[in-house]
Image (cartoon, rainbow, N blue to C red):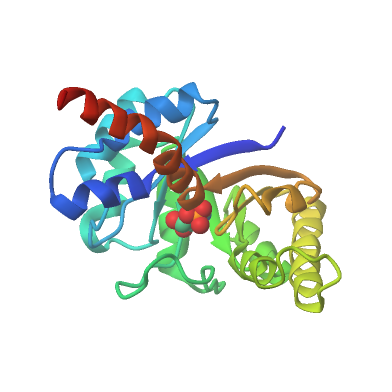
Length: 246
Ligand code: PXP
């Protein structure tokens, strides 16, 4: 079965909107694991817009499955130090740009990128499984392995956008093109034996259309799960408040 990492960043986004204590992403992680999550994913960004250092610290103590920390591959914002100190089970290195709403595009990997190589080396020396968030491109995947990564997470955002534009119509040329890119990338990963993960823009509607990717081990899904959790919980939350007003 494909491993599900639940990204709880947006629970922290709601909390940070008021700089208060609720909703608590650590409590959300406990509930996600009770619901069957195989892992919990959080992105500690340099601007600390949602997840905070203390969240990661507490999650390290409470998460029973895999704790996957997403971070940019450099020393800005002290995030590498947090990772080396707290030792999550897994780190996914992602590009980060302060102006973006969410992670845009995969990492640009170059063989001579000494900062990226050093980051991978330091994390692996702490026995942290290192994954690189990449575009579905066979050459990039080979390079990721050469640089020492254990896994690649394929950026599924373009495919998810194509899926949304045609509502999943399999014969749509742009959806076929995006799916072929993911399939080729997955085959390249399987051929060289690097672990394959995928994520970004996956939803309840589209995820089944990627289950056939060869050797896909893990998906990381955030926004749509947090969105659904808000909707599913709304009726009860209002009922609880009404009861206090009787
Ligand atoms: N994987 C990576 C590397 C990401 O940056 C994100 C977004 O934070 C996700 C998965 C989850 O994407 P989404 O919130 O669209 O499910």
